[in-house]
Length: 86
Image 1 (cartoon, rainbow, N blue to C red):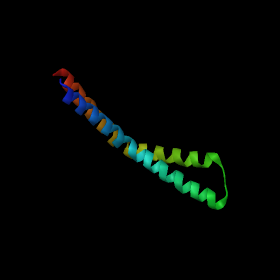
Image 2: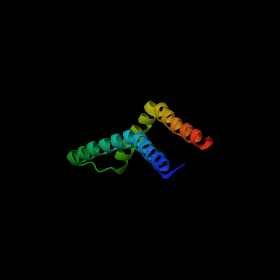
Image 3: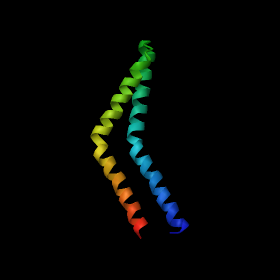
Image 4: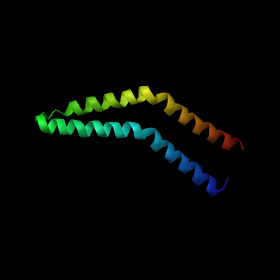
């Protein structure tokens, strides 16, 4: 195993983390911005309102895309184990 292979494995791992976390992060950020605009317009400054909606969005994304996320993670892990075996 040379440095190029290790760099490729690390690059694939970082890309996997970005690919798996992006839907949750982007949707929760979008919900946060929309709720901030709503709170500014209506002058409702409730801290828990934003948290509850963001948590709901993250849970929905995990329920909808959880199997896809797990399959990607398992593929990466299987690839790592196959590289370890030789």
